[in-house]
Length: 102
Picture 1: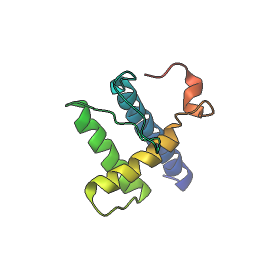
Picture 2: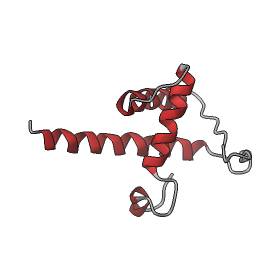
Picture 3: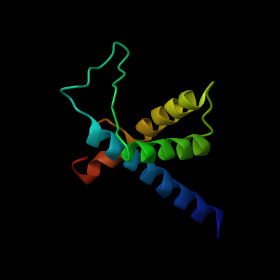
């Protein structure tokens, strides 16, 4: 396998992981119940079994992105921030061009 093929497959996997994380978070985001903090933080309660999938996605992302933190939760938070940047919760994201999310 050529290096270019490996990079292409890794890119597709990265986008798939980011999109799945975005889908699960969007699915459980309740605008009525979630209040945005002063720093822009939004709490999303993801119940089991989706929570197990989100945890696994964050662990994979942390490994792929080389994210590190003082604890497992800080490492997952850093990976989540990178995933959300990749998934692009903004109007300019390439992932948003495919239609409605959720």
